[in-house]
View 1: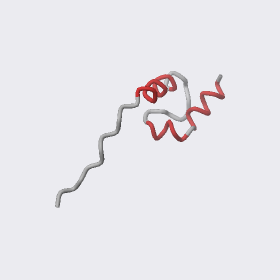
View 2: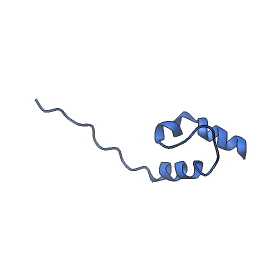
View 3: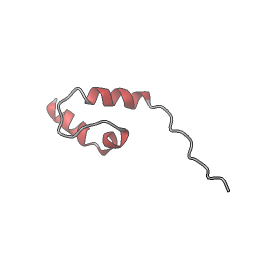
View 4: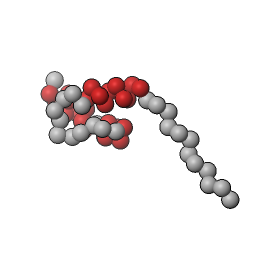
Length: 50
């Protein structure tokens, strides 16, 4: 029996742009992948700096 692989994840250009923008801030919590982005910690730290 063949194993089925999950379909490839679509490219998320808006998430990529947001992660690049978040990385321009000096935050204690890095934002280098979508999982870190969705935790909200990096976003909260950036908003606090603003």
